[in-house]
Amino acid sequence: MREMLKKEPFKLFILACVFAPIVEEMMFRTLVKPTHNDLILFLCAWPIFIGIRFLPYDVHCGLKIGFAAVLVFVFFTVLKELIPKYKTVTIREGLHKYLWTVVIITSIIFGLVHINNYVDSFTINVALVALIIPRIISGYMMASIKIKNDGLSWAMSLHFLNNFVVVGIGLLAQS
View: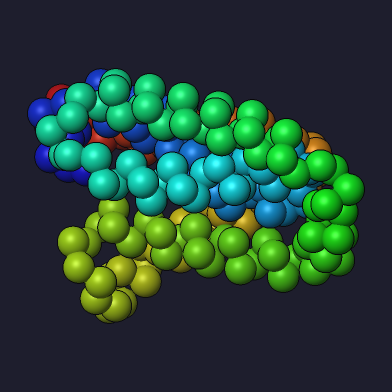
């Protein structure tokens, strides 16, 4: 992240402030008090998140994001046709029933996914835990925002704002 901040600040802004809030909220907050469309977005987000890592590193960032956007659109359109609303009722009711358990689990996983922002290999130490706990708390806050406002866009907006502040501070610190 520091390297990208120095060499490609615009790319970091797009990835951290646009791409990450959209994809990460689709990966985690769609399970919190989900609608039928939320569950379909969840099914779209994880293959994109995993699959984009297999694209060559030197592929232009814009192409990767465009590719991901097209895939989400195609997957969403196909899955919406294949999975009728009545098929997701039981899953949605179960996730509603255990709402706060889902919030806690998704918040912890959200925090753990951000480990790769700080280290190249997985090693647990006090410093890493101190860096991850705020990510778990922010995951909890974004889930709470989604619950209170009944919409994924609110969680995405909070995520954008959080990342915007971090990237902005990083840019100001370089000046």
